[in-house]
Each structure stands twice: as C-alpha cells, then as structure tokens.
Amino acid sequence: MDLFLSFLNNTGYLMLDHRYIFMICIGILFVYLATSKHYEPLLLVPIGFGIIVGNIPFFQGFGIGIYEPNSVLHYLYFGVTSGLYPSIVFLGLGAMTDFSSLLAYPRLMLLGAAAQMGIFTTLLGALFMGFLPKEAASIAIIGGADGPTSIFLTAKLAPHLIGPIAIAAYSYMALIPIIQPPIMRLLTSKQERRIHMPEPREVGRKELLFFPVVGTLICCLLAPTAIPLLGPFFFGNFMKVCGVVDRLAGTARSAIIDTATIFLGFTVGASTQADVFLTGRSVGIFALGAVAFSIATASGVIFAKLMNVFLKQKINPLLGAAGVSAVPGSAREVHVMGQKEDPTNYLLMTAMACNSSGVIGSATCAGILWSFLL
Image (cartoon, rainbow, N blue to C red):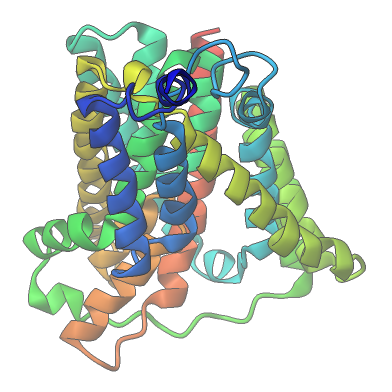
C-alpha cells in the first residue's frame, strides 16, 4: 500500500487543477477544429496537441518541462526562442511563392502595405493599456497575421510573451473564415464584390529572377534586422525560379518547412503551461490581437476602395483583405467570397499577389520595430 500511495503521489492526477484542465480543453478544441472543421490543420494540429502535452502537470526538477534547462522540450523550444524555426519556415515559403501575379499587377503591392496599418494602430493600443514598448511591438505584429513573424519578433523583444502571442497569432490565422467575411461584406457593396480582374500579362523569366534579388536589397537595406526572415524568403524564391537547383527548392518547400512547422507548432503549444500562460495579460493580448487582425483587414479593403477613386481600371476591394500575410487562408477567403457573388469571378491568383506582398510587408515592419526598440 505504501508503494502504491508513493506511486500515486508521483502521478499528474493529484497535481491536476482547474487551470491545467482548462488549457487541455483548449488544446482538444484546437485539434477538433483542425480535424473536424478543417480550420488550418497544419497549424492547429501540432499547436493543439502541444497544448495538451504542455499542460500535463509534473514534479519540477526532473528535466521534463519546456521551461526546465536540459529537458528535451527545452532544446526543441530553442528553435522558437532563437528565431530559427521562423527563418526556416520563411525559406520554405519563399520556395513555394509564385511572384508572377504580383509582378503582373505591381499596384497590388500597395494593398499589402496598407494592411499593415493594423500593426501600428495596435501598437498604440497596447501602449495605452500599459504594456512596455517592447511588449507592445510584439503584440502589434499580430496585426500582420503572420505567425512565424510574430514569434520571431517576440523572441527578440519579449520572450516571456511568446506563448500567448504565438497562440493568438495562429488562432486568428485559423479563424480567418469567421473573422474576415463579415468585415469584407460590411465594407463592400455587392457590385464591388463582383468586379472582375483583367487577365494578367505574361511575366518573363528575367523578371522572376531579378525580383528576389532586388527585393532582398530594397527590403533588407531598409530594415537590416529583417534579414533573418526576408533573406531566407527571397533565397528560397530564387531557388524556385532559377531552375538549376530544383532538388534544393523542392526540399525547402516540402521536407524542411514541414519539419520546422511541426516543431514550431508543437513547442509553441507546449509553452502554454497553465501556471505560466493563464494571466490577465494573456487575455489582453488575445483582445488586442483580434483588434489588430480586424483593423488590418479593414485597412486593406478601405485602401483598395480609395485606389478605385483614382483608377480607370477598378480593382476588386475584396483583394485588400488578402493584404494580410495569412498565406494562403486570406487569399482563399477572398476568392470564395468573390465566387459567392459571381461564380465566374476568379480572384485567387490576384489575391495571392496581395498575400505575398503582405508577407514581405509584415516581415519588414517587424524588422523596423526591432531596430527601433533595440
């Protein structure tokens, strides 16, 4: 009986309280949304399961938890705190991105820039709520709707907030089908949603080759602190378009990015240990994240409507919602809404142009914020 009681005292059942149970339920909800509703499963499955694993209570000092030095999870988490995983993800994203639509419609780059307004308005809101400048900048980047960028900047400026910021950023990315459509419907008319985009011009190989090189020079000279993100991003894209390293490009957009996504999602989920994660600040971060994402979506749509005042060839204002860098979720949602109004209206390629511009814009904004707050 003594041995049995000793064993029972070493299990997690006796240490399980309402906080851990609540977080485990959140993890189960994430897994459910991914598997049943198909809400961004590549993100929510590893994050959700990581939340479940990270909230199994244990005795401190055994080298088990993600915050304990020399534990396995702690070593895996180093890829998050150092910014390694986000850089690898950006390498894979670059190798997956086709810039031909963006080069065919260069004016759409402005929509990617306009959608970043969510970052700077949320920065002011976070400062008003009493967050320190570095914390406010980390929270504000949620408005870019880019999980890896949010994690990277937070790791550099406010590593103690990685858990809530990462979960907020990825949650809102997964909830795009719920958050963005009401905003798009509110700000556009049925006639505007039916606007067709013209057929894109053919983009030559030289343009595709020059773009990642020129993009690297322009963006990284403007914000050198964005090099860890945009350097791999444009490098991955150059591997894709140069045509002489197809094996490397294929590996970058498949095995490498998949591996980084698995470890990034799982360890971020595991970092939401209830005794560390459940605080009033976490609630505030979630609220600000929702505001940031909504403002970013609205800013892109409103700016597209403003551009139409001066353009003879009107653009579909829905494309402004794809200016956030939630690739490819927001582009897909824009296309779906356009199809609902007119089944012959295909917006996916032009929406992806705005999406890829948003990726560059959010990473550049992150670099600018980091350089200001060093």
